[in-house]
Image 1 (tube, helix red, strand yellow):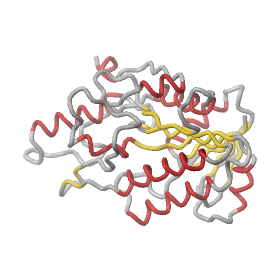
Image 2 (cartoon, rainbow, N blue to C red):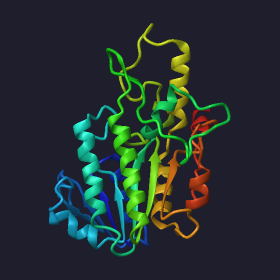
Image 3 (cartoon, helix red, strand yellow):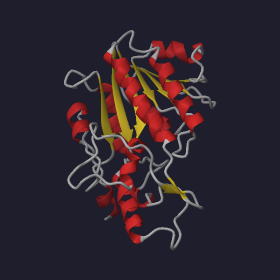
Length: 284
């Protein structure tokens, strides 16, 4: 399998690239990223601009790929503005114009932020977050001065999911939208997952105990360990699509964390994903 990875120079792209170097079923990796990268082993770097729909630097390898894993975003942070979010959507749309003419697997790195509103507006008791749950983009966070609930980033991920679904319905493309949880850079240890969403720590008097408890449960529940991340991405690349209800699917991507609101039944059933890590067991 010849695989294109966009955003290959980032946290997630780098982890998957290193993993695929040792995968015998992967014959070549083409990493598309504006930052300079060195060719290494199976890996070939391409400094293409996905915002440019006419840039042959990225178009040619994408058209020749057996699979595309799309991590790239103009700003991959939750505080992304609408202009940046629009450019991220442009990247996805541009890529989708050049896949599906031949059989191809498209794995889109969606985000937990598509459902981020459920941190503060919880689901009814007994309900969990799955593909059919109505989306609620944006996760409320504290920036050091005030609380915000930005929606641009989560909305861009939701729109891109829908674009993958639409392209797969009318082409030879099969797609997997993975709503990736919290994969921290480096070792990605459970003890560094905090109730502040990676932002500035909430000071005394800035949030009540119930809010802190809710945020703690939310962020810890969406932890995705490094090895579970690599497993679900590999499954997304290789799982047969015949059992799926549509040519493209949406699945939750978190570890096997006790009491998480993220429902993993669809990832287990359609991809064969079997997460092995549990944040609460790791924390003791």
